[in-house]
Length: 94
Image (tube, rainbow, N blue to C red; front, side, top):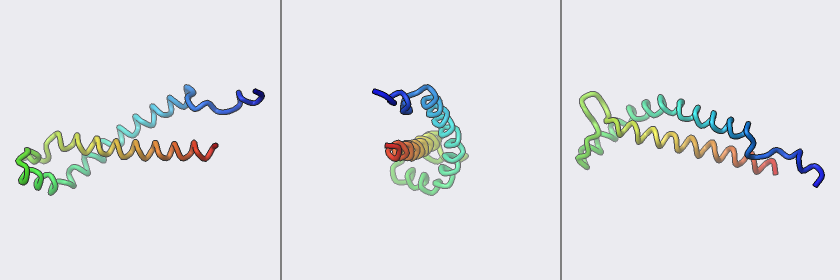
């Protein structure tokens, strides 16, 4: 087919490297965001501990698992937003 070589390949090496770099950037930026959100949600963690008995608040702040949960939520939301934006831009090209 003439002209078939001129279309951008969706899984080229540069696209993969760009995806990996964006993924790493999301993971790095999510750390301070997750810490801030976890501290802001301190009343929620206190409520969760008082109603369920699960240790969520210690003498120095929220437990480690609280930070991990919020970090995973932030990464998932950012990753889904990035994937939706990327998918939308691919659909516009068609």
